[in-house]
Image 1: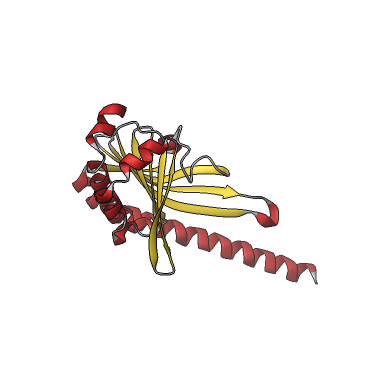
Image 2: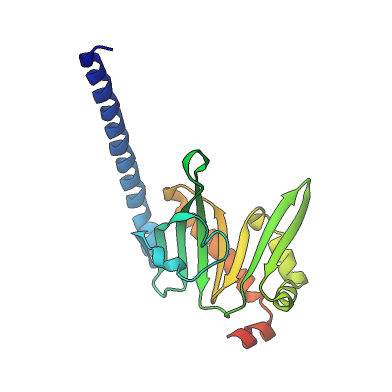
Amino acid sequence: MEPIIATVLILGMVGGVGAWVVLDGRKRKAATASLAGPLSERDWNLTVRGDQVVAGLTAAPFGAGSHRRCEDVIRSADKRLVSFTYRWTTGSGEHKSDHTKRVTMIVGGPKLPKLEVEVEVEAGADTTNVRAADESVGQAIMHPQMKERFMRPDLMGRSVFFEKGRIGLVDDAVPLEDIVMHTDVSAAALREIDALIPVALRAKFS
């Protein structure tokens, strides 16, 4: 290939990447601006990065992989609600995979031993998969009313964790412009779950 042709091709590629970055940046700026009103109405704030919100957490998906980070972090003024996009990487080389989830947590609940509940939908049958550090706590918390709550459509295919005074809902990632609405819905579900924690467990682990 003639040097001048190769140079033109390289410059064209670089220019294309640059244009994409500029357009992506403009789209993000517009989406962020559109959230200002809804965030203010709820007394929430939005920050680009906030990795410390998952400090000490080991429930899935936290603690696995590398390049772990929390982005587009929503926090309520009272610090009892936090929502963020969680990204991490597993594998390397040709086996490298990037993962993204949207996580919403309510903070300040009973400090239960780590408990993870995943609602699985397989062959038309809905089941809850429970992983508990303390089996007796798992049995106590999954009483009939709690099981019924987990079987509602808004939790299908999602997972919920209880750890270090936090109750969290792990869901697929959503576009930036939708994170406020998604946080509203997720927080409402988490508050209903929190209200169903047995009084005896709440008293024991408060």
